[in-house]
Image (cartoon, rainbow, N blue to C red):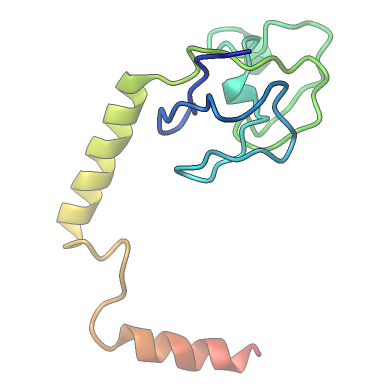
Length: 120
């Protein structure tokens, strides 16, 4: 059965994945777990515990994989506005640090390797 479910984080369509989603299913684009509160139709940021299902156990990490029996994937879990805000914040961070958030400064990679050797 075809579905229009998209990853809550990046918006990639997940139509190649079969339903029900497995607890270990990941987004093929951004590799986040999909059996999470943020992907569920019961997820609602405006209610206590951020879940509209009264019988569900409390899950503190809404983006962490869980065992919730009430999980039902939601077709509108992806919020383009939140993604745009995240991208804007990441871009501001990279411009502030010259893109250093993703790669080490000159010479730092060698120092990091030496530090890592201490723990091996």
